[in-house]
Image (cartoon, rainbow, N blue to C red):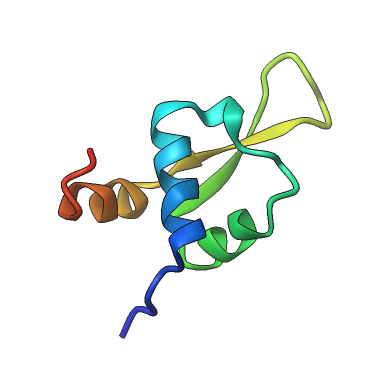
Length: 69
């Protein structure tokens, strides 16, 4: 059974939906969401050591079920 997401984790999903650059890459919520397979790290094309996060299909489905996407 999936665990309940905290309000901060839900807010992080919403920020990733609307403004991915607005999420601090050091946010502890990103790692929790990644562990739940709701977000994934992707490499930035212009930077070898840079990555950013984006919603997975599962993360998008969570927001759709909440009526946010």
